Length: 532
Image 1 (spheres, helix red, strand yellow):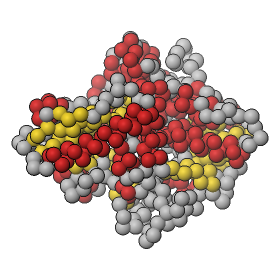
Image 2 (image 1 turned 180 degrees about the vertical axis):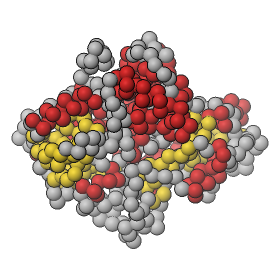
Image 3 (image 1 turned 30 degrees about the vertical axis):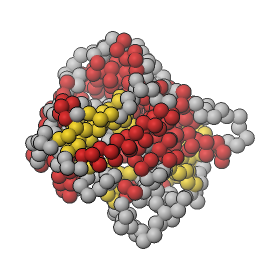
Image 4 (image 1 turned 45 degrees about the horizontal axis):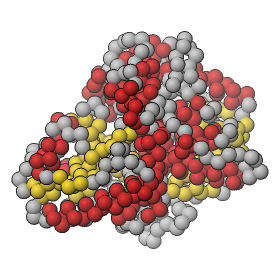
């Protein structure tokens, strides 16, 4: 747990002063073992795995931690059910095993069980119930196989109409015959998970630099630029790993991906009766695709998820299209007593998935594919497998995969680094399945942490420290001045946007951002640093 004593933080704390100090140290000795490019979940996971093996590790990210795809997920820790349905048993098992680790050991404080309810309407409720129930049953078998206890994720069950309406009061009651209730894991916040991984890596000695861009890179190192000062530095590395997701082709043009865009809507939770479950709604005309609702912080509910090809230039922040918004609303409205309209949508967000396409290396095109990324097929049908690709320059690129399996992807990446660059070194294997992330505390004992429950869900065992920093102006949605200052002093926020968009997610809704900007600026002032 970080202890803030004067200006001397715990080794896991990230802040502007540490950044300056470690950049100076890197300039004085610019030879490292592993250079990681990209500060999402996978990049931070690689930094943690490499540092835990005793390798001198540096991570550079041109924006902020979780600036890209890692903050635009559905905030779910998937157990692999959808992969069972398509015969991808290896990926399904990997997903369930990594979900188990996250929920029971690595981050119990940032995860929780989430009920998923599929309402059943006549006619056709018996057939739909049998189909969905069979799928949930397979997923539950996988849950048992990897050892996740029922106290963490319960078995699926059929529920009656009254219970369905009690759990999901916004659904229409006419012709309702009940529902199927399954369970999966939910993240409180994907960006908070990334920050926790990066801080844990820093605690093991990794240097984590945000606002530092890799201008060019090869297998022996990179030229990096401090975006804040403009200064450049040549870093020599025994291995360079690109964890830049859909942007991997910028460092290694030989990497060919089929990005897809996943879009979510944000609506007030009151429109769903304050339900704390995921309402799971079949997409009309499909037997395997669903739109679902997700309870979220700050009194919001997310509605997702699209899966459409994302061709052309790849923006840093993708935008939802009108067609996607209409599709999500139309689908969820099929089960609501009071349909949602455009006026109910207070924000949207979209992320890009770095899906593999073509042959097993990910470098070939799928039949009929073109540079637009659309080969006429559904990107939802593409595998979520990951791969470690070595480009002509010697850079190793980690592509594919998904948020739930970030740790396994990182382990595979560092194994590849060791095999290619450290074959003669006496290094231990990966230990990250046994390393709890900062703030982790046994799930059954989280109630013992002496802090408000809302803070315990965000900070775990660190909540008492995050709650006792000096008072100041609060932000929107009950976010305290202490939380904002913790983001600056301990979680590496360098800019007001870092606090609002990724440490608290207040920036998702424009009115919340406007109400919180002054409080965020005051947090930097209290910490004695200027936001960039």
